Image 1: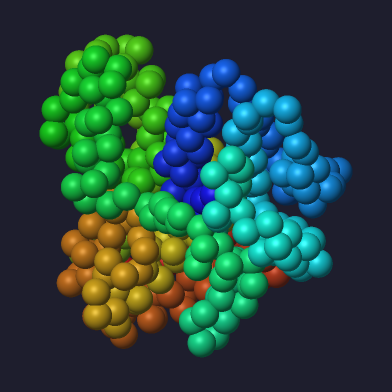
Image 2: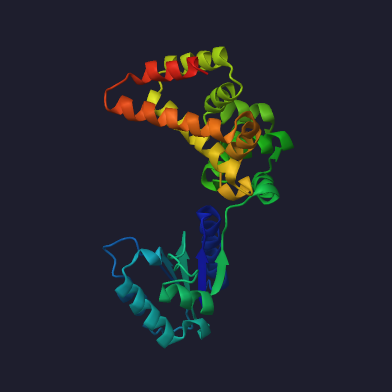
Length: 314
Protein backbone atom coordinates (compact mmCIF):
# COMPACT_ATOMS: atom_id res chain seq x y z
CA UNK A 1 0.00 0.00 0.00
CA UNK A 2 1.20 3.51 -0.81
CA UNK A 3 0.26 6.65 1.14
CA UNK A 4 1.34 10.21 0.33
CA UNK A 5 0.93 12.91 2.99
CA UNK A 6 1.91 16.46 2.06
CA UNK A 7 0.99 20.11 2.50
CA UNK A 8 1.97 23.35 4.21
CA UNK A 9 0.21 22.43 7.45
CA UNK A 10 3.00 20.22 8.76
CA UNK A 11 1.46 20.07 12.24
CA UNK A 12 -1.64 18.18 11.09
CA UNK A 13 0.26 15.99 8.62
CA UNK A 14 2.68 14.97 11.40
CA UNK A 15 -0.29 14.22 13.65
CA UNK A 16 -1.75 12.02 10.92
CA UNK A 17 1.61 10.24 10.66
CA UNK A 18 1.64 9.63 14.41
CA UNK A 19 -1.93 8.26 14.36
CA UNK A 20 -1.02 5.98 11.47
CA UNK A 21 1.93 4.50 13.36
CA UNK A 22 -0.15 3.90 16.50
CA UNK A 23 -2.98 2.30 14.52
CA UNK A 24 -0.55 -0.08 12.83
CA UNK A 25 0.99 -0.98 16.18
CA UNK A 26 -2.44 -1.84 17.61
CA UNK A 27 -3.75 -3.65 14.53
CA UNK A 28 -0.57 -5.72 14.17
CA UNK A 29 0.49 -6.07 17.80
CA UNK A 30 1.62 -9.70 17.42
CA UNK A 31 4.29 -8.88 14.85
CA UNK A 32 4.95 -5.41 13.54
CA UNK A 33 7.99 -4.27 11.56
CA UNK A 34 8.40 -0.49 11.45
CA UNK A 35 11.14 1.72 10.05
CA UNK A 36 11.26 5.51 9.75
CA UNK A 37 13.69 7.12 7.28
CA UNK A 38 14.52 10.82 7.16
CA UNK A 39 15.62 11.59 3.61
CA UNK A 40 17.09 14.94 4.67
CA UNK A 41 19.70 13.05 6.72
CA UNK A 42 22.50 12.87 4.16
CA UNK A 43 24.24 10.09 6.13
CA UNK A 44 21.41 7.63 5.52
CA UNK A 45 21.42 5.39 2.42
CA UNK A 46 17.70 5.77 1.71
CA UNK A 47 17.28 3.38 -1.20
CA UNK A 48 19.37 0.64 0.45
CA UNK A 49 17.29 0.80 3.66
CA UNK A 50 14.01 0.89 1.75
CA UNK A 51 14.88 -2.09 -0.46
CA UNK A 52 16.32 -4.13 2.40
CA UNK A 53 13.28 -3.61 4.62
CA UNK A 54 10.74 -4.25 1.86
CA UNK A 55 12.55 -7.32 0.48
CA UNK A 56 13.28 -9.04 3.80
CA UNK A 57 11.22 -12.23 4.08
CA UNK A 58 10.02 -13.23 7.55
CA UNK A 59 8.97 -16.69 8.77
CA UNK A 60 6.09 -14.94 10.49
CA UNK A 61 3.05 -13.30 8.93
CA UNK A 62 4.46 -9.82 9.19
CA UNK A 63 3.05 -6.38 8.37
CA UNK A 64 5.64 -3.78 7.49
CA UNK A 65 5.31 -0.01 7.79
CA UNK A 66 7.98 2.13 6.13
CA UNK A 67 7.86 5.92 6.53
CA UNK A 68 10.04 8.12 4.35
CA UNK A 69 10.13 11.81 5.26
CA UNK A 70 11.24 14.69 3.00
CA UNK A 71 11.75 12.43 -0.01
CA UNK A 72 11.92 15.42 -2.39
CA UNK A 73 15.07 16.62 -0.65
CA UNK A 74 16.88 13.72 -2.34
CA UNK A 75 18.74 14.24 -5.60
CA UNK A 76 16.99 13.21 -8.82
CA UNK A 77 19.01 10.00 -9.19
CA UNK A 78 17.93 8.75 -5.75
CA UNK A 79 14.31 9.66 -6.41
CA UNK A 80 14.42 7.78 -9.72
CA UNK A 81 15.79 4.68 -7.94
CA UNK A 82 12.89 4.76 -5.49
CA UNK A 83 10.41 5.31 -8.32
CA UNK A 84 11.67 2.29 -10.29
CA UNK A 85 11.58 0.17 -7.13
CA UNK A 86 7.95 1.13 -6.42
CA UNK A 87 6.93 0.35 -9.99
CA UNK A 88 8.73 -3.01 -9.97
CA UNK A 89 7.34 -4.13 -6.61
CA UNK A 90 3.84 -2.69 -7.24
CA UNK A 91 3.74 -1.61 -3.61
CA UNK A 92 0.27 -0.09 -4.03
CA UNK A 93 -1.12 -3.65 -4.45
CA UNK A 94 0.87 -5.22 -1.60
CA UNK A 95 -1.27 -5.77 1.52
CA UNK A 96 1.69 -6.63 3.75
CA UNK A 97 3.82 -3.56 3.08
CA UNK A 98 2.73 0.03 3.62
CA UNK A 99 5.07 2.82 2.53
CA UNK A 100 4.14 6.32 3.65
CA UNK A 101 5.81 9.29 1.98
CA UNK A 102 5.63 12.52 4.01
CA UNK A 103 6.57 15.94 2.63
CA UNK A 104 5.86 19.41 3.94
CA UNK A 105 5.48 20.52 0.34
CA UNK A 106 5.36 18.66 -2.91
CA UNK A 107 8.11 19.10 -5.48
CA UNK A 108 8.06 22.17 -7.76
CA UNK A 109 5.49 22.31 -10.53
CA UNK A 110 6.27 23.02 -14.14
CA UNK A 111 5.23 26.36 -15.71
CA UNK A 112 2.30 24.57 -17.38
CA UNK A 113 1.00 23.56 -13.96
CA UNK A 114 2.02 19.89 -13.92
CA UNK A 115 4.65 18.24 -11.80
CA UNK A 116 8.17 18.02 -13.21
CA UNK A 117 8.88 15.18 -10.79
CA UNK A 118 8.30 11.57 -11.83
CA UNK A 119 8.12 10.24 -8.27
CA UNK A 120 5.51 12.81 -7.30
CA UNK A 121 3.44 12.02 -10.41
CA UNK A 122 3.55 8.34 -9.56
CA UNK A 123 2.54 8.91 -5.94
CA UNK A 124 -0.34 11.16 -6.92
CA UNK A 125 -1.64 8.56 -9.38
CA UNK A 126 -1.05 5.38 -7.34
CA UNK A 127 -0.98 6.36 -3.66
CA UNK A 128 -3.70 7.26 -1.22
CA UNK A 129 -3.05 11.03 -1.13
CA UNK A 130 -3.92 13.51 1.59
CA UNK A 131 -3.03 17.19 1.30
CA UNK A 132 -2.95 19.34 4.44
CA UNK A 133 -3.71 22.95 3.58
CA UNK A 134 -3.48 25.68 6.26
CA UNK A 135 -6.77 25.97 8.15
CA UNK A 136 -8.83 29.13 7.74
CA UNK A 137 -11.99 30.63 9.22
CA UNK A 138 -14.51 28.20 10.72
CA UNK A 139 -12.15 25.22 10.26
CA UNK A 140 -9.43 26.91 12.32
CA UNK A 141 -11.92 27.84 15.07
CA UNK A 142 -13.17 24.24 15.19
CA UNK A 143 -9.60 22.93 15.44
CA UNK A 144 -8.90 25.22 18.42
CA UNK A 145 -12.09 24.18 20.22
CA UNK A 146 -11.48 20.47 19.53
CA UNK A 147 -7.90 20.78 20.84
CA UNK A 148 -9.19 22.30 24.07
CA UNK A 149 -12.08 19.83 24.41
CA UNK A 150 -9.61 16.93 24.30
CA UNK A 151 -7.89 18.42 27.33
CA UNK A 152 -11.17 18.94 29.22
CA UNK A 153 -10.96 22.70 28.87
CA UNK A 154 -13.23 25.41 27.50
CA UNK A 155 -12.78 28.69 25.63
CA UNK A 156 -15.10 31.58 24.85
CA UNK A 157 -15.56 32.91 21.31
CA UNK A 158 -13.83 36.25 22.00
CA UNK A 159 -10.71 34.39 23.16
CA UNK A 160 -10.77 32.22 20.03
CA UNK A 161 -10.99 35.30 17.80
CA UNK A 162 -8.12 37.01 19.64
CA UNK A 163 -5.92 33.91 19.37
CA UNK A 164 -6.49 33.71 15.62
CA UNK A 165 -5.82 37.44 15.29
CA UNK A 166 -2.56 37.24 17.22
CA UNK A 167 -1.24 33.77 16.32
CA UNK A 168 -2.78 33.06 12.90
CA UNK A 169 -2.93 29.51 11.55
CA UNK A 170 0.53 28.34 12.64
CA UNK A 171 -0.68 25.24 14.52
CA UNK A 172 2.74 24.53 16.04
CA UNK A 173 2.67 27.88 17.81
CA UNK A 174 -1.09 27.71 18.41
CA UNK A 175 -0.77 24.36 20.19
CA UNK A 176 2.03 25.75 22.39
CA UNK A 177 -0.03 28.82 23.28
CA UNK A 178 -3.12 26.70 24.04
CA UNK A 179 -1.12 24.38 26.30
CA UNK A 180 0.26 27.42 28.12
CA UNK A 181 -3.23 28.88 28.56
CA UNK A 182 -4.70 25.57 29.74
CA UNK A 183 -1.95 25.09 32.32
CA UNK A 184 -2.88 28.52 33.69
CA UNK A 185 -6.65 27.94 33.65
CA UNK A 186 -8.82 25.25 32.06
CA UNK A 187 -11.35 27.96 31.23
CA UNK A 188 -9.80 30.32 28.68
CA UNK A 189 -11.23 33.81 28.40
CA UNK A 190 -10.22 36.91 26.45
CA UNK A 191 -8.35 38.39 29.42
CA UNK A 192 -6.24 35.21 29.73
CA UNK A 193 -5.17 35.47 26.08
CA UNK A 194 -4.33 39.17 26.44
CA UNK A 195 -2.31 38.40 29.58
CA UNK A 196 -0.35 35.35 28.42
CA UNK A 197 -0.08 35.47 24.62
CA UNK A 198 2.27 37.82 22.80
CA UNK A 199 0.97 39.02 19.42
CA UNK A 200 3.00 37.75 16.48
CA UNK A 201 2.46 41.15 14.88
CA UNK A 202 3.76 44.35 16.44
CA UNK A 203 0.53 46.25 17.07
CA UNK A 204 2.34 49.60 17.39
CA UNK A 205 3.35 49.39 13.72
CA UNK A 206 -0.31 49.44 12.67
CA UNK A 207 -1.09 52.26 15.08
CA UNK A 208 1.76 54.23 13.53
CA UNK A 209 0.53 53.50 9.98
CA UNK A 210 -2.97 54.54 11.11
CA UNK A 211 -1.55 57.84 12.36
CA UNK A 212 0.28 58.35 9.04
CA UNK A 213 -2.92 57.67 7.12
CA UNK A 214 -4.97 60.08 9.20
CA UNK A 215 -2.18 62.72 9.07
CA UNK A 216 -2.03 62.63 12.88
CA UNK A 217 1.45 64.10 13.21
CA UNK A 218 1.43 64.39 17.03
CA UNK A 219 0.28 60.81 17.56
CA UNK A 220 2.75 59.47 14.99
CA UNK A 221 5.68 61.25 16.64
CA UNK A 222 4.55 60.07 20.10
CA UNK A 223 4.38 56.44 18.96
CA UNK A 224 7.76 56.82 17.25
CA UNK A 225 9.27 58.18 20.46
CA UNK A 226 7.86 55.27 22.49
CA UNK A 227 9.31 52.81 20.02
CA UNK A 228 12.78 54.37 20.12
CA UNK A 229 12.75 54.39 23.95
CA UNK A 230 11.94 50.68 23.96
CA UNK A 231 15.38 50.04 22.46
CA UNK A 232 14.11 48.32 19.30
CA UNK A 233 15.95 48.72 15.99
CA UNK A 234 15.04 51.75 13.86
CA UNK A 235 15.75 49.62 10.78
CA UNK A 236 13.20 47.06 11.95
CA UNK A 237 10.66 49.85 12.43
CA UNK A 238 11.40 51.19 8.95
CA UNK A 239 11.09 47.72 7.39
CA UNK A 240 7.77 47.07 9.13
CA UNK A 241 6.26 50.40 8.06
CA UNK A 242 7.46 49.72 4.50
CA UNK A 243 6.02 46.20 4.71
CA UNK A 244 2.57 47.52 5.61
CA UNK A 245 2.67 50.28 2.99
CA UNK A 246 3.58 47.59 0.46
CA UNK A 247 0.58 45.53 1.61
CA UNK A 248 -1.66 48.55 1.11
CA UNK A 249 -0.32 49.10 -2.40
CA UNK A 250 -0.99 45.44 -3.26
CA UNK A 251 -4.46 45.61 -1.68
CA UNK A 252 -5.34 48.68 -3.75
CA UNK A 253 -4.73 46.73 -6.97
CA UNK A 254 -5.89 43.25 -5.90
CA UNK A 255 -9.27 41.83 -6.87
CA UNK A 256 -9.54 40.10 -3.50
CA UNK A 257 -7.32 40.90 -0.51
CA UNK A 258 -7.74 37.32 0.76
CA UNK A 259 -5.70 36.11 -2.22
CA UNK A 260 -2.64 38.01 -0.96
CA UNK A 261 -2.04 35.34 1.69
CA UNK A 262 -1.63 37.80 4.56
CA UNK A 263 -1.78 36.93 8.26
CA UNK A 264 -5.47 37.29 9.37
CA UNK A 265 -4.67 40.28 11.59
CA UNK A 266 -2.63 41.99 8.87
CA UNK A 267 -5.40 41.39 6.33
CA UNK A 268 -8.02 42.91 8.64
CA UNK A 269 -5.89 45.99 9.44
CA UNK A 270 -5.02 46.42 5.75
CA UNK A 271 -8.72 46.45 4.84
CA UNK A 272 -9.35 49.08 7.52
CA UNK A 273 -6.45 51.28 6.40
CA UNK A 274 -6.96 51.14 2.63
CA UNK A 275 -9.38 54.09 2.48
CA UNK A 276 -7.01 56.35 4.43
CA UNK A 277 -4.67 56.63 1.43
CA UNK A 278 -4.86 57.22 -2.28
CA UNK A 279 -2.75 55.00 -4.50
CA UNK A 280 -0.51 57.97 -5.34
CA UNK A 281 0.01 58.76 -1.63
CA UNK A 282 1.07 55.18 -0.95
CA UNK A 283 3.59 55.22 -3.81
CA UNK A 284 5.01 58.52 -2.56
CA UNK A 285 5.34 57.26 1.04
CA UNK A 286 6.96 54.02 -0.10
CA UNK A 287 9.44 55.97 -2.23
CA UNK A 288 10.33 58.20 0.76
CA UNK A 289 10.91 55.16 2.97
CA UNK A 290 13.18 53.57 0.37
CA UNK A 291 15.25 56.77 0.18
CA UNK A 292 15.59 56.82 3.98
CA UNK A 293 16.73 53.18 3.94
CA UNK A 294 19.19 53.72 1.09
CA UNK A 295 20.76 56.95 2.39
CA UNK A 296 21.03 55.79 6.00
CA UNK A 297 22.85 52.62 4.94
CA UNK A 298 25.26 54.74 2.88
CA UNK A 299 25.88 56.93 5.91
CA UNK A 300 24.39 60.01 4.22
CA UNK A 301 21.73 60.46 6.88
CA UNK A 302 20.93 59.41 10.43
CA UNK A 303 18.00 56.97 10.30
CA UNK A 304 16.39 58.21 13.54
CA UNK A 305 16.50 61.85 12.41
CA UNK A 306 15.29 60.89 8.93
CA UNK A 307 12.27 58.96 10.25
CA UNK A 308 11.41 61.77 12.65
CA UNK A 309 11.55 64.31 9.80
CA UNK A 310 9.40 62.03 7.62
CA UNK A 311 6.71 61.92 10.35
CA UNK A 312 6.98 65.67 11.03
CA UNK A 313 6.22 66.40 7.38
CA UNK A 314 2.95 64.47 7.35
